Image 1 (cartoon, rainbow, N blue to C red):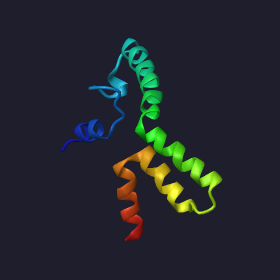
Image 2: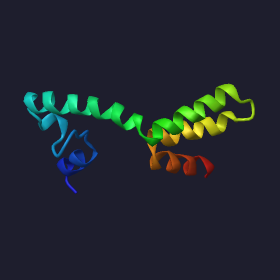
Image 3: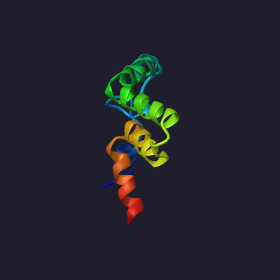
Image 4: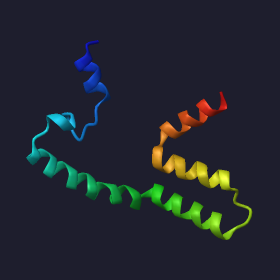
Amino acid sequence: MSDIEKKNKESIRLGKKPVWEMSYKELLISIPKRLIALPAKLIGLKGLVLTVATVLFLKVDRFPPWAWFATVGFVLFDRDFLEFLKDIRK
């Protein structure tokens, strides 16, 4: 694999092209779309799960901090967080 292919594989992408290959017009279109999509994701089921976990953590003494941390990690990072937890156990 060449250096360019590695750089493209590891790069930040806002669509099909890496950010540094986009024109200003493309960036001005794609960044607001991302900003609109982020709250839409938080309104869904994951947002509800995070809200319930936070309320239980703050109001109920029997909800442990590690369970809240696990919920926050899973809501924010999905499967990557589970892989992180597996790495910690090793």
